[in-house]
Length: 141
Image (cartoon, rainbow, N blue to C red; front, side, top):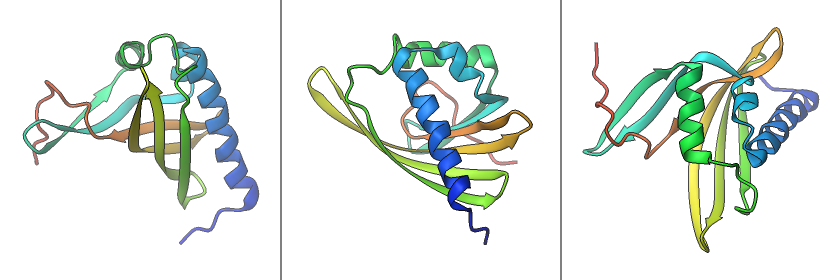
């Protein structure tokens, strides 16, 4: 099992601090610059099944515009992230988050796969329940 150094953990923390700052501003194109495409997306669909797809950059940008709008500023977003290094180049980051929308607190639990590229860390896979409305259920084989 790979044990990351303190510097590696701080590097992931800084990556997310940069990501969160861009998200707060609603800088969706710059967020897309922090990703590797096609991006894998896994979620669940109504009816109790998973749903998976791959997004192009354009699809990611459109989805984030719809979900994030002008950014996360003012939502009192709070996140606790737990990085799990599989290797020095692959990190699964589990996030517990909450935000307040129109006075109501919402909780989220999701995970991202970050991959080390020549240009630094990038996210490549997003896993979060609840996005699959209208998506076809996943099929084996």
